[in-house]
Image (cartoon, rainbow, N blue to C red; front, side):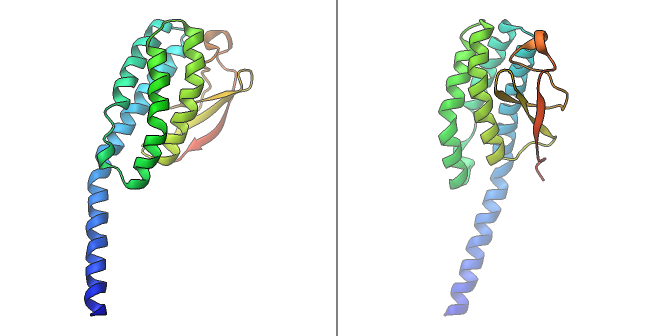
Length: 170
C-alpha cells in the first residue's frame, strides 16, 4: 500500500510540474511585455517627452491587464495580486497627463513595484539594471548599464549609478 501511495504521489507531482512548466511561457511573455512597455515609458521620461510618456503609459496599463493570473502558481498569484493594483494605479496616472513632473512622481512608485515583480518573476532574457538617482532618492529599471536618468532627463542625464543587475532567466 505504501508503494502505491508513493507512486501515486510521484505521478501527481510530475503532473503538477509539467503543468507549471507548460504555463510558464504564457506568464513569462506577458510579464516581458509589461517590462518592455515600462522601459518605453522610462525612455520617454529620459527624453523629457511627456506626450510620448503619456501614450506609452497607456500601452503599459493595457499590458498589465493582460497578464494571465490563472496560469500562475499560487505563490505567483499572491505576489502579482499584491502589486497589480499599484502598477495599474501609477501607469494609469502617467497615461492621463503629459505633465512630466507629475509623471515622474508616479514613475518612482511604478519603478519600485516593477522591481519587486522582476525579483519575483525572473523572466528577463537580457540583463536588467536597477539604477539609482541620489538627487531624487529614487530608482528605476533599465535595459542598459549606461545611466539615462528618467527623473531629470536631459538636464542631468547621467546622474545615478547601477545598484544591481537582475539575473537573466534560465
